[in-house]
Image 1 (spheres, rainbow, N blue to C red):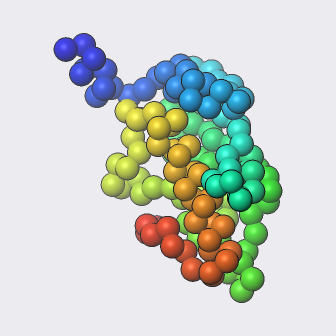
Image 2 (image 1 turned 90 degrees about the horizontal axis):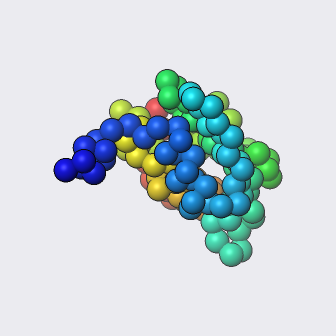
Image 3 (image 1 turned 90 degrees about the vertical axis):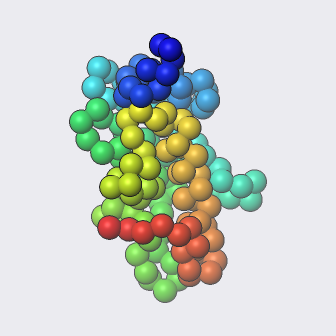
Length: 137
């Protein structure tokens, strides 16, 4: 019965840190009582670039995800990169649909979604079409 209750509770910073460190052992994670910062490398496919990612999670703010390197660039048409906030942070989910909540682990949701976003980013550069679906506010 206790485990079911815990599933319905927000994950603590320490729980999030432990989950990231377990699943992504090469990532560097720093944290305090209110927030965490995780930096690591993702490579969506064996032919993809290796991207250095930064995830910032604060208990009172929306999660922020950005690509540190390589620098993301517009496509050959000069179009802005789709599904980004201010061309700085990745748009991975729609908050109004509760696709990510504080009850979920970043390691099971956000980080895999980053890899998928990067995959579609690379396809977008080849096709000039965003094939990842979704809607952007």
